[in-house]
Image (cartoon, rainbow, N blue to C red):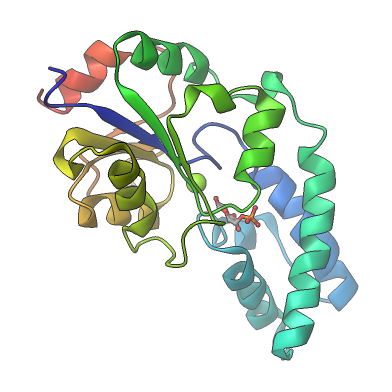
Length: 220
Ligand code: BG6
Ligand code: MG
């Protein structure tokens, strides 16, 4: 078994923790200042998308043009507000079932990596008190190519010297599922099967999910 599956890679936002609500509050505040009508439905389009691309989508919604320097300032402003929210987070915000699953992987010598687009990932992991679970952390500070490019996942496996075929990725965004498949890894969607097409399997969350089930659904 260990040979077949040696590494589990987790996306952060939407898989380990629901930060979309904080991203929304911060983007909404910025959109309000810019006079752009931005809804929770629009916010769905920003999941898994980088900070700058998220800003560009909001500017497109509002039909606004900005220079590169202005965009940088706006992205920084949003991030300052977002960081204020995440600094208030604690372990109670870890999504149900995540902690026992991480512990079970660790107890069974399966390596654990993070594969996230967020530059705030280290702050969030520290706030949640789970940084020590991760053998490798690959985040928006390390990678340049956004999902669905596989870089964020291949780098994690490379850092740990594990072949892609021996890795499974947990993702809540379609672009992330695609990135995992392009990396040659197994992909388990976290969310709704209607949205996360092509994944090897989709779970609604980690409650009542365990290692035995994971191996079973992956046919291992
Ligand atoms: C992704 C989120 O994980 O990280 C996106 O799903 C977010 O919504 C992106 O824009 C970048 O995050 P950050 O923290 O670097 O602004
Ligand atoms: Mg996500």
